[in-house]
Image (tube, rainbow, N blue to C red; front, side, top):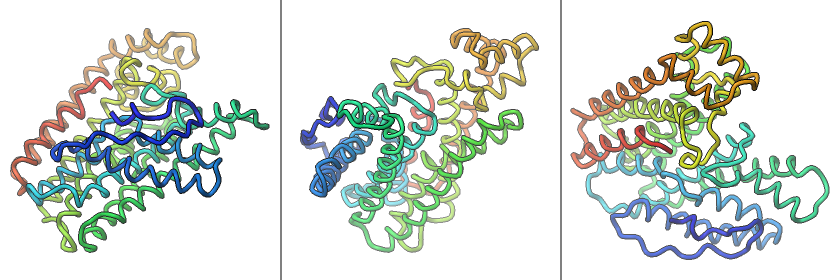
Length: 374
């Protein structure tokens, strides 16, 4: 894995070791290698401006290379393959890998907003930078420095994403068509993130429908739907993909993306931190208006509702709160919602005019992306 080669302590200036040459059919390996090849000179260029910028560049690099499912480039790849069939993947790799840089931007900023200490079992960017501040003996508030630096780390990843996308080896018309989809994806992700933080301040006026709207924009759009359409745009050139392909990918993407977020909601309450890499129960303690917790509140008895409220006040433990959520029937309801959406996604592909290999791969991805433990 790429993150096995990362520095192990703040400020370590060792370069990332080259990865073993990936097999031409190993999409994840090819994405990882593309990212390493791109990021290594970018970090060096920052250090040449000023040695102190090495910490910024390496922290950003580590956020990108610290594992993850690489779902966005995988969905984009199959969106492209659905239109193009078995074409060589190499020309698309910069565009596919750019989606991981965009994802890193979103995660770093999300961790700042959520004040998260860990991500994928590792310290978040703002914690890494705060620790570097302390280790260097600098003056001022290390937490403020870490937060400010992490905002810049996220911004840097976003700029890097644009730069890598521009290096895609496809006709200009294809890149411009994909860029339009990419820009819409960014707008929708930001809109969804704003609604997400707004919901935390207005939970009493939130609804299941609105929580699903957040899921569609914060998660479904930039995790599944837009990457699929991005890949199809790369394949379709100036004319874009056929309307039937766009319709099928949109329906599939919305369904799988919502199911993906619903699974995240379940993992936040019932997941094993050793597998998810994040503490369990944050949503329970903050009363975040997720679909799961809104349904739990609707289905709960008066006693269960009171116990959930005491949990937000810090007088009931996370494990007990998770038991209460299950007892309301909300956990089972959300599991059924996931199953229904996966079935709808697979049905959407049934008559779509796409390559059969892509149809099979996307049907498999619909299950694997939503039936997971991390």
